[in-house]
Length: 148
Image 1 (cartoon, rainbow, N blue to C red):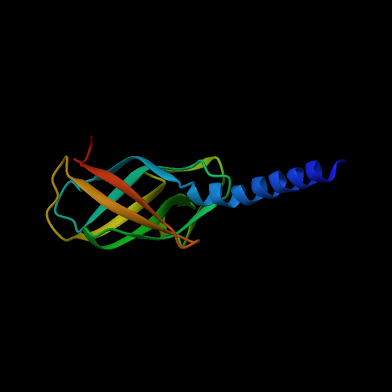
Image 2 (image 1 turned 120 degrees about the vertical axis):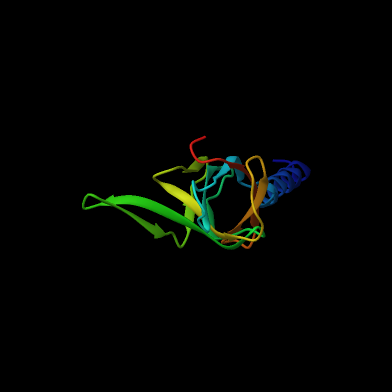
């Protein structure tokens, strides 16, 4: 191979490989169809649902949830254990490349405790998901009445 062609090939290969991490850094998961369910009565907690999609080429791990609208926020999962519905906090949530996590009633969901101000149907609430790599995913959740 001609020396200039070999050099050009090496430069192009190096450029291609150096672009891969940049593309991965620019990629971010997204929150879709987020909503919060108001409790039917005066309770200090709301549940949050929606879909978190990871279209990135690398896995994403959520390690913490927060919202300026609530004193405490966390991820939970409801499971049937020995015929009894049990809810437990999830310390983290890993979403594989090209996959999604669905937050739904009776399954994985957000628990949002002690709203800092009254919420009404149609209100929008910001929720932040801290990622293991130090990044942050932000989502908007619309407040709905119970039963909607």
